[in-house]
Amino acid sequence: MVEIILNGSQHQLKQPSTVAELIDSLRLPGSGIAVAINGEVIPRSKWVEMTLSAQDRVELLTIAQGG
Image (tube, rainbow, N blue to C red; front, side):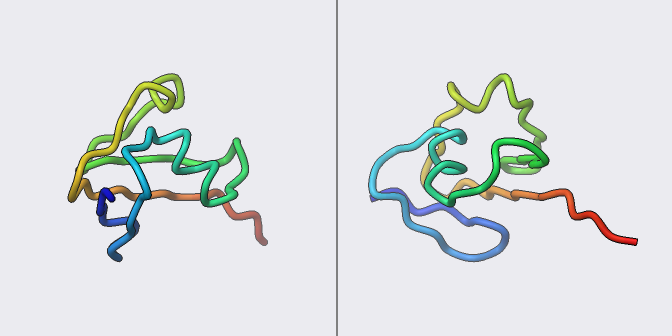
């Protein structure tokens, strides 16, 4: 198991995962999401190759419409 900090809370991954795999496992949409790991914004083009490590601080932000 790999334990990360996701949006301020502990989160366990069953196995080492990429950012893309994390987003898929959370059933988030493929667009409208920004990702930062340890304070660094990760471009979408890097999601499939960026593997998460134990205790990484991951922030997922989604765009919300409103008025």
